[in-house]
Image: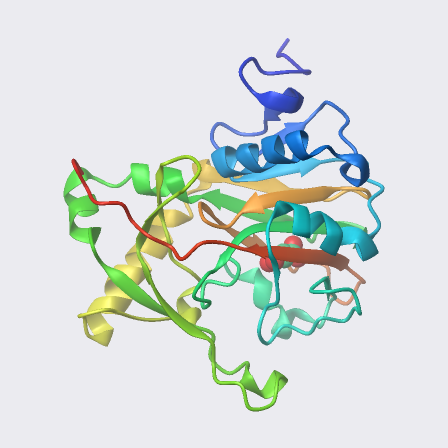
Amino acid sequence: MGNQTETPGLDLGARPLTGSTAVDITSGIDLAEISDGDLERLKRLASQWCVVVLRNQKQPPSQLSGLGARIGTVSYTPGLIQNTDWPNVYKLVNYGKKRAITEKWHTDGAFSERPAAYSVLMADTLPLAGGDTIFVNQYAAYDALSPAFRKLLQGLHAEHVWKGVAHLRDGEPDPMAIHPLVRTHPLTGRRALYINVLSAMGNIVGMDEAESRALLTFLHDHSIAIDRTYRHRWLPGDVLLWDNRCSLHAAAHDFGDEERIMYRIVTEGERPYDEPYGDA
Ligand code: SIN
């Protein structure tokens, strides 16, 4: 029988949930009372495994900002309707499948100069079945590229733009930023592919539209390999912490008009960078 309690070398009784992506915390940590040391351990696990799963949490959503402020700087997402009065805590509700913007593979806030580092998502009201959130590991996507392809990506940057959200906040231009296609994670030192849902990406700097689409489409399709995913089936009391710098995620909208309410915060990361290549 497999080890159901603790995996040697992993803090907080973390247990891998797939071969490369996501760990489950088995030590019964309560986020509402977590120490600074354990919070740092959780962040490190999220940066190593992309996603951390915490069960049976009692943390009220009204206190998510406080938790977020201990993780980093809680940031707002342009264009997303907040639906709460708590600082930068977003209540995500079911606006119907046509408006389910989170159903495509994405990383939070890529159109910002300093995109999201961590996201925290808490289940409030769940459909009878479905509404899973799926993650994919972008370290592993980078590692799976051939050395020749990795070399091709060296130094390439792409435009990230969230088109058409300006109407949600009067007068704001579409948020836009330019980031490297490969980024080095500041905590783990590992390289990860950094792309977003293709509709929120413009051209690769120095390439025309056809060239950019071809390369970005390849990177997108390459990224979402099934053996690098983790699919989270939500239960009441679940909280997920993930690191957007090394993962993509998508929420399956397979629950029709049923209610699904989640609370989310994101913390601001650093400006993405790729360290100089000694090797490839
Ligand atoms: C998100 O994309 O940030 C939310 C995902 C979800 O609702 O499961």
